[in-house]
Amino acid sequence: MRRRDFITLLGCAATWPLATRAQQAASLRKVGFLSDESASLGRAAFEAVARTLRELGYVEGRSIGFEARYADGKDDALAGLAAEVVRAGVEVIVAVGTPATLAARSATDRIPIVFSRVADPLALGLVPSLARPGANLTGVSVVTRDLAAKRLGLLVEVAPGIKRVGVLWAPTFPSAAIELKEIEAAAPRLNIQLHPLPIRQAAELEPAMRIFAEQDGQALAVIPGLVFTEQRNRVAELAVRHRLPTMLSRREHVEAGGLMSYGTNYTDMYRRAATYVDKILKGANPSDLPVEQPTTFELVINLKTAKALGLEVPWFLQQRADEVIE
Image (cartoon, rainbow, N blue to C red; front, top):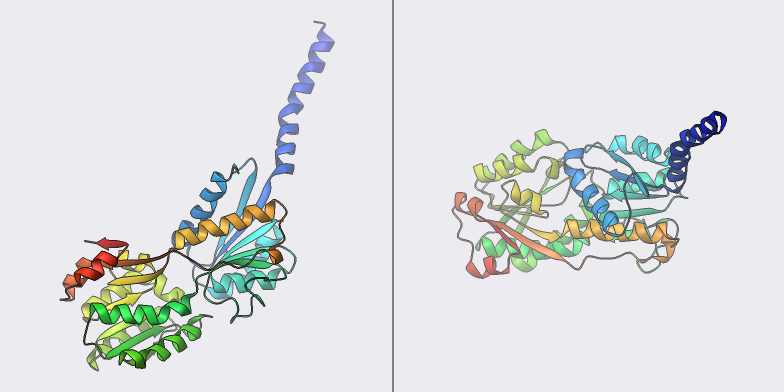
């Protein structure tokens, strides 16, 4: 081979990696991920979405890339984070949580948004119809309010004879007032007196729970809210200290020492959200994708906590549980 030809060949070879990288960048589908939770907690949702997309054939760094942002429970940070995700040029945004979904909607009316962990998208005005959501939003609802009466009933089953139940709720959390109304409607049928305990910040937890216990409070129901999820270890510790059997909405609370939870299987919900992303990346219009409601619910009971509270969890309830922590 002549020297000139050899140099020309080397020059061409040197451009191959650049061309390959440019080609890969052009084919990379960018997905935004916006969560109202901390990175340590929200990462589980992200991993469920990313894992499902891998199972659907996407390869991170080659065919798909992510722009993930976590608000760490600070709702006032969400608007800026949503704007960052939009500026990153994503094709679809996965919004986890009601505050994150509201922030994403305010940031764009063009980029498709797949929401998840939203209690009531109709009542919150996110979509006009579950069957035909319209605009650029669709996703998976947790139908939280429909579970309020069921949770209260399970609390009575595990702690029969209770009459005074405190309700921890966060007035600033968008869907909390909706579920509070639902649980208030269910209480008379179970002969329960409810005592709402509004919590706006973590420092209010200890005095609220202590005063309620001193006033002959007998049990607690915790309405979903970020302050309770982020402070789940503290809530569990205080509940045991003040001898208050507690019903919660997520297994993470029970794993942290709470008595029991009943609600949507969150991992399953996040995986289903990923299937929406796949459909949209393949050309589906979000306005044509009906909002799904969960079909998988789980009851989780912590027997160690029950023992600490002096409770004997009925055997039939243990048999119904999806998981019993011993």
